[in-house]
Amino acid sequence: MRVSLCLSSPNRFLQSCHRPNSPNPSMASGSSSLMWFRKGLRIHDNPALQHAAKESNCVYPVFVIDPYFMEPDPNAFSPGSSRAGLNRIRFLLESLVDLDSSLRQLGSRLLVLKGDPGEVIIRCLKEWEVKRLCFEYDTDPYYQALDIKVKNYASAAGIEVFSPVSHTLFDSAEIIQKNGGRPPLSYQSFLKLAGQPSWASSPLLTTLSWLPPVGDVGTCEISNVPTVKELGYEEIGQDESTPFKGGESEALKRLRESIRDKEWVANFEKPKGDPSAFLKPATTVLSPYLKFGCLSSRYFYQCLTDVYKNMKWHTSPPVSLVGQLLWRDFFYTVGFGTPNFDRMKGNRICKQIPWNDDDELLAAWREARTGYPWIDAIMVQLRKWGWMHHLARHCVACFLTRGDLFVHWEKGRDVFERLLIDSDWAINNGNWLWLSCSSFFYQYNRIYSPISFGKKYDPNGNYIRHFLPILKDMPKEYIYEPWTAPPSIQAKAKCIIGKDYPKPVVCHDSAIKECKRKLAEAYALNKRLDGSVTEEDLKKLRRKLEEDENPESNTSRTRQKLIG
Image 1: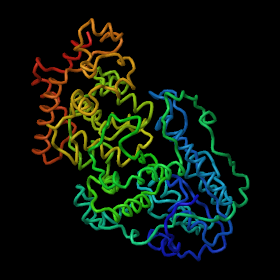
Image 2: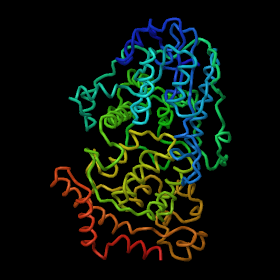
Image 3: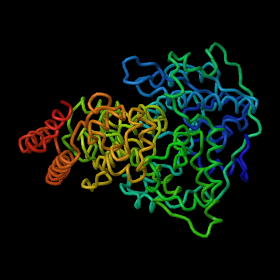
Image 4: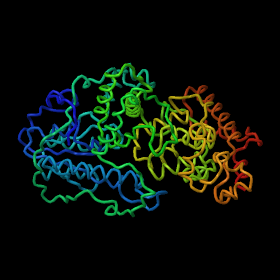
């Protein structure tokens, strides 16, 4: 695999990005290395892999099939494991097949093992008498705990550990240290602290011409990359699977296509873009490749800055494409430095809000049965493709939480975490905190309308007709509000509302009033108690809200009326 970019000295590059826990490289000279792939499923700009290859007689490239993420769960609401939907599992397997192919071209191969990753890696270190362990640093809590276990063993066994920061543009720990031990809570303060990436002044090493061979694997059970079926899953039809294929090769191809149009790159401005565009999405769709590290965010950053240098004008952060990479680092940093970032309780930066515990409304939202075609079409795209435009994500997240249903953001987060092929712990949690007005953004009066917002981009409703074919013959005058169509129109469109397609689960006009009222009360409580809101405080507020609820705008009564 070749990527056209000037190469720097590997030694110079590695010195700029290794973490302080890296000992003298000569310690493992002439010995074997284990390269532990988790994310970072690529050859280009992979300092851990480069370091593993340096002065080693043999390199063991390892990926562990983790039952925590990969074992089938028959009780889950969609095909997949308890943590990930089948689309993301397939995307990962495709990425591993591509990585194995690239490694074979370099004279190596990917060694696939199965089990608890910590136990498997420690067993391999022992069996293969490895003297150097290399893996990309990861800020996710799951990997933080796992890495402590493996590092402790390696340290006691005298094994060198090299764990560079290369999944993000910046080292989150360094940003937090610069800020006095706490993460910056605004994008602008993050930018001031971060400055320019320290590695950005030198070209990244993007090619390898050779890798040392794989050593003797002993009694360890090695397999090829398994298929979906070999993992215990049933194959799903093409119509039910994502159109985006995993792997570094596909990532670099998509990157080349994205930056070929230099005017588009220079003028890119988020949040602009058409969320209803599905035949040709209005964004790069590089997020799943960044999530799995099939594409280096640092290489993406350098490609973008190279384009900017040759343009008379270009957009700037926070709305530019580089700005989106910086948003990614911002959420990584806040997530890394905030205890309980993935929940409301015990999260110091999260507003304490008495969300509804309504499994019926949650299921209607999750299963595309809200009766609002714009919302339901987005949720169908999520289930089938594992991806949707960022503005589409904003719409359904707002609808579930502060806009209409007032269901806890953690419930929606769990659905996104499962179904998105680009599901990323820090970014997913950060966006749900933002969109529910629980943190970062507090203008809860600004609502995405489930009717007018989509209509602005797609007045004919082509997006709805594609993902909700039951409505394909509904006239455009009624496509966003089919319950308002006269019975004769519904009959002609072969879609009777309440029979072929559901009635709205809530009345939007009254639901938003109730949501705003509840949020105003919750904000007042958080302010009065300076954020120290207890579970008992929330219970009292919930009782007060129920007592004060206006019968005319009671969302539960409205729901019963509309469903009945």
